[in-house]
Image 1 (tube, each protein chain N blue to C red):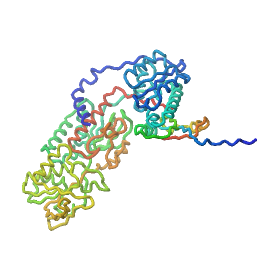
Image 2: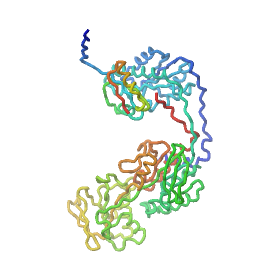
Image 3: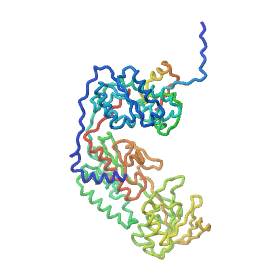
Length: 74
Length: 518
């Protein structure tokens, strides 16, 4: 049984999940807003109190659930 | 900073009646929601046009209704306005909400406001989540309303998912030790200690040397003609006679333990170690005059610093020195020491005027790169020019050259206005060498884990918003330890730091943050 080849969509837009620290990266994302810096809308931000508290499982779960990339900022 | 200083003095007058007319805000008893299923209210904000002009807010609000667990949604023009807050509170009661999501701006600024509306409506304030659809959507995806709206929907969905899992959080309270540690017994430290003591707080004042007064002991007169030593003497007398101030001379900070509100510090005092407990720390450790080896300083008797000149002018005078040349920015505003010491232009003009006062026939030349007798002192600069003080500009690349000529000197400098090289026969050469951070500043910054700026001075939390606070709560700074400044500025800053410390010392209790990991 052969696995059918999957074509990557020509206009591939990744879904990125960002897990970010409240005290630095989240503030940076706020600053990007205040400064009206324009960036692609592909990212969904999850705010945590410390990036050191992010269990590696939480980085894998978004991928298993259909996300394309995970960014941890802290 | 000046406003805080004014508040400090007003607070000093009012300290006896502090809190006597304030009302304690009462909150309704907290509803027990432990047996309830999540009932989420979602409030979506337009923020005027900040969100609504990009994100289609009605569509987001409509979408929120379809998320499981959401029982109520509403759209606001400004969620943070008083009437919106009242509506949130009313909705909590009317629809028996036990979780709230506000989709608006960043929680870093507005979460406390929305959380207090939960508290006022009788549910635990931590049953709240904010979706940041302004900083993280409308403002950063301005040209893509469709994607911004979809992102806003996702952010709301994520916030709802999270808020449904939240449980009430209860914060803890700690007592505050209402005593202050002031480090440094110069004008800033003494002014600060006296203000705190005047407001009824016990102060431990620690001075490294055997004498109070700091750098001001060497300032003999000010531009306006005041005598700083009178001020210093008065401060010293007030400090010595104030029962709220415990003074430790020849003492330093050996070790610090504890945290905001409850510090335990070990002082190294002449008789050994002394342990003290206090709630706040004010750093007023001052600065030092910079030294130089340039322009024959230390190798020729006719070369002085500006400060040494001042001692002479206040005492025996400069004898028959008739041609006096001052060089500004010596060792300053170059690669090694890029900052301006702020007071040198002031001092040069001050001393030039004093020379002219004592000997109107004297020729005074001030060789400068930029003159800034800032604020109202510009009038004294104008006065100096009027009296015939000659200002000659030089550049960092093309510095004056000083040569010994017996017990006199020859100073050569290019005058850019005449486009000629001047040779000045000089009886006395005076160098403005500027200010450097006090010895031990680095070690003290590590003891208290506070930051220094690139120039080595203590760094405030925010130049405009928190000018006398350190980034960590309960630690404050004032005087030359922060940056070079005039006495009057040190006094204002010392008072400002005092009233900032009082905002902490006058609290009943300290509340812990309710942040939890997830």
